[in-house]
Image 1 (cartoon, rainbow, N blue to C red):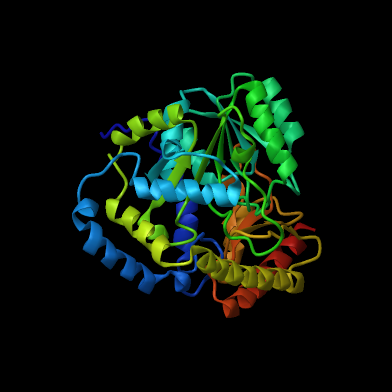
Image 2 (image 1 turned 120 degrees about the vertical axis):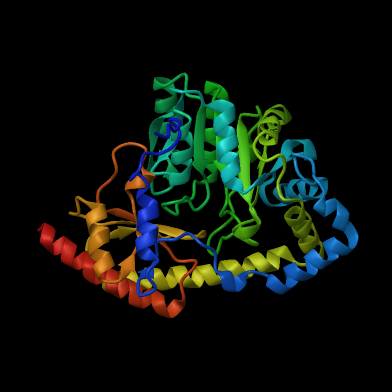
Length: 397
């Protein structure tokens, strides 16, 4: 009999995988995924960039590289976070990773031992829960309101859990809720991290994709004591297939993460790193991001209009100013997975809210994605979803 480690999930526990597999039926209009819009991938521009890399850095791009990443890419990252987030950093503050998922894993390895407490938003990104659960973390859920993480609830949690190792937060257009934490709360989070000596992992994969409102500086920009690690990715603004993420923080912490990366995959794909460096040199990345933001904003607005038109009275939903997701709450529904099954019969799909909660899930909640859906399908999908929700609400009366 094969004996797996405790980190391997038991058979039948991959609920999200099963949901996504069911939603893959081509007759189903699926709002369940979290994919960028492939029609905006800069294929021609990236081909030109890669050709230039082979012409000018071919042997270097095909050779083993430094675990921290290509220096030119790390310089590009420090410049961009200074311009956009007001974060002062040097190349030694940055490590390139194989997707931002690797940051989650390396931070778990670096900070979490069996039984350690990790603070998370309620709800939060489900893959972060999966990763830290595999290292034996005990989760402490921190409440949110309409503006994201509540700092009063955070301080209360820190008082009650003085040995907590880490706070994980998605500060912009949070996955799954789409909420954005205001600047005053971000400043307070940085202050609380210093006061209670807890590390913060600020995950910002969606921050560039803002189609409404004003930019809010990162928690890291308020960090004066090196308690905040800031992570992001090129997946949402260029191409997820390149698997390029990065983490920025205290060089002493980055040193430790680099050692852990060396024993994981040695280094991130050299060709992909050089391709991004050359793409930035040849193209206006902000113009490209503006195109992404405009399309996602249009699709989000269509989704909001469809929900107003087709959803039964009493259903609540967030209205994000950017990102890729929004969050729905249906009153009177006690079993969201059963609701998913009813919706699947109507040939429409979402991700039930249950796996986004570290503790007790909130019934009747689910996440919708609008970034990767043709406009004409958005209304039809919401029409189908509205019918299923109306039937479910009526059954619960």
